[in-house]
Amino acid sequence: MRSRQIGSMKKYRTALILGYGRSGRAAERLLHAEGVAVSVLTEENDGLSELSKILSGTEFDVCIMSPGFALSHPWVCAVCEAGVPLLSELELGWSRHQGKTVAVTGSNGKSTAVKWIAEMLQLAGRKVEIGGNYGIPACEIVLEHPELDWLVLEVSSFQLETVQDFRAEVAVLLNVLPNHLNRHGTMEIYRRTKARIFGSAPEVCLVPADLLPQLKDDLGGAKRNWITFGTVDADYIYRDGRVFRGSDPVLDFTGTLFENPVFGGCTGAAVAAVAEACGVPRERVETAARDFEPLPHRLQRLGKVGGVAYINDSKATNLAAMSAALKVCGKKIHLIAGGLPKESDYTFIKEILAERTRSIYVIGQVSRAMYQAWNGVCLCVECGTLETAFKAAQNAAKPGETILLSPGCASFDQFLSFEERGECFTALFQESVRRRGGTS
Image (cartoon, rainbow, N blue to C red; front, side):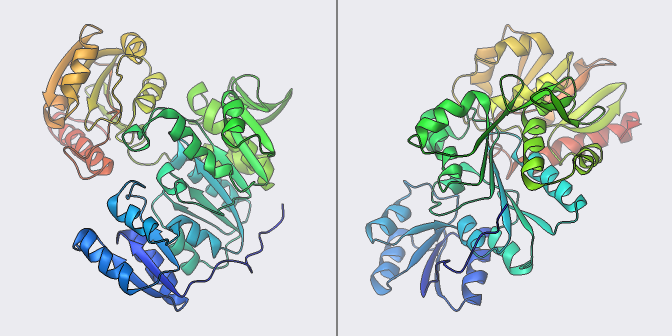
């Protein structure tokens, strides 16, 4: 696989940065290091009036936009009307990276995939860093680690809205499930946005087999090196704890987190394909799978109290992620769900709720809608807060059963982040361990 040439990367004299979170600050540092004159507009500024003054007084070569700004935001519209090109912080950082890139997008499972990919590359002796939507801005990584062999990026649909020339050597789309429709509007627009990860013709394009026809249409039939993965009719197929290419077994996940159709058929099969594309030996991939430590708030098994298992899946911010959690966690589940809604149809998940849950405790802004959709599937209780739901689930659960926090919603109605929500659940569990005794 060839290295990318960066001699033609764009240089700027002046730049405007919208938003001053971590990505905005990282972009400012990188641009200042290159001698660029930078202006920053934050939410604390005077909105459109302040932006109008800035745009009228300076001719900008580029606007680096925080992924938190939708394309319909008045500031973004004003920048476009002034003729200033938009660029994501992700692409700015990537353009200064001298090595190779693996980019992963999808509705669910991105963080787990990029962590595993980075760890297997490290085991294979490569210099690797993870960034992007994973938490560390690409601009920050390239400033602090200029000699990387591989940059592994988690890429969100928000970041993909403004990419132009972004091109990874290996680009992966894990899945497209209902998510962020409050921003993108329709599933078609959301899918087309995800497909932008393939827009500049990566050397290897990895996709779920069932999505390939739609993705080809999204890209106007443009030729790509498509490689598929899944559980049936794919180049890389997960079956019974192993991944096959054709009839040849290429990886064995027996005894690992990925030994199930939910993780194996998506993340496991995709990572198997990434490994071969990147030249990582099979034993390194399998070692990384065996040693893999799940990320916090993602099906994180906290322990048991009174024989009841507690699982923190606060990162499940859409119903598809909740469905996956229910499939992995078995049956006899007492589910805590709810928060700030991203979706409006709660009926499609009723079948798996009926199959897997003993009771459901709904919280947050969406609690009434969830209760109306799910009452009758099993015991469903409107609880308001996470603390109330935790106590109610704990009183109902019996030894051998599971209390699962898998909200299926964003957290911002009651918490600052999904991390804070998961930490609250974890603190409630730890208090139960202290009061009742248990294993943590």
